[in-house]
Length: 337
Image (cartoon, rainbow, N blue to C red):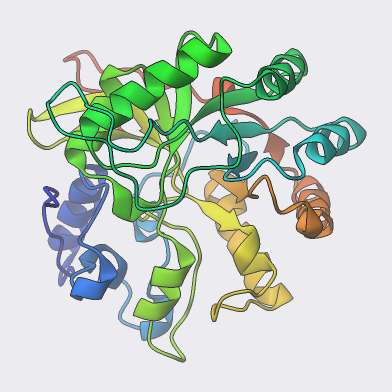
C-alpha cells in the first residue's frame, strides 16, 4: 500500500507554491497501471499551460536559483544484476579516468524467515553472483582503492528484508559507514525508505522504470526519462508516518542505457538527449548515467555521453561528494542538497 499524499495539478501561483512544498514530501505515487501516477501527470496549469511542458522537472522552475558557485554534476551508476562485463568496466574506468557507484544485489535465500516473522520473497530471479564470493570481494576491494563506491540494489519492498540485505552486504564486503541503494520505484514504499534510513543508507537512487514509463505516456506526448520527484536536485526524503525528515538523500535524475540505445518505445533522438542535459546544466543539478553492469556492449554510448557532459562543464562525482543540506536555526533542513 502506497502511503504518500496525492498531488493534483496546480491552478494558481499559490497552488504552485504548495505543489513545490508537497513534492519534497513525496517519493512514490501509485503504480502506473492503476492509472493514478499523479506525480507524472502534474502540470502547473498557471505557469505551464502548454501541454508540451508536461513531465519535466517542474519544481526546479519554482525554486530560487542555486548558489552561483554550484556547478552541474554527474554520477556514473551501475546496477549489477549480472556479473558479466564487470572486469571490462574496471579497465574502462581506468582508461577514462572516472569512478563509478556500483549497487550490488544481496538477496536472502528464498523463504528465509525475517525478523518480523514473514518469509523472504523476490519477484525476480537471484543474480548469477554471490556477494560472499571471493571474486566479488576482490573486485570491490580493488575498485574502492580507485575511489569507487558500493551499495545495495535491493530486491524486496519488505522493510525487514531490506534491513537483512543491508547487513548481508556489509558483512560480506566489509562495508562500513553510509552507503547508497537503489531499486525500481515500484518495489518500495515509505516504510521501505524508513528501513533504508535506519540501516545507514545515505542515498536512494530509485527511479521509475522505463517500461512502465513508456506504457503510461500516450503516443505523441513529450517523453523525459528518469525524473522521480520533479527536480534535477538531490533532496532529503520525508517520513510520512512519523512526520519527520529522513537522513536519506534522493538522487532523482537518471538517464538509463535502455533509453539511450532506443530499446524502449521512448526512443530518443540526439536533440532529446541534448535538451535533457540542458535541464541539468541550467539548474546546476546532478544527472545520473545508469548503466547496468552486464551491458558493457553499450559502453560506447556511455563514452559519448561522458565526453558531451565534460564539454558542458559537468563535474563527475560519487555520492561521497553529495552532502545532506544543513538545517536552519530552528532545526528544519532545506530539503534540497
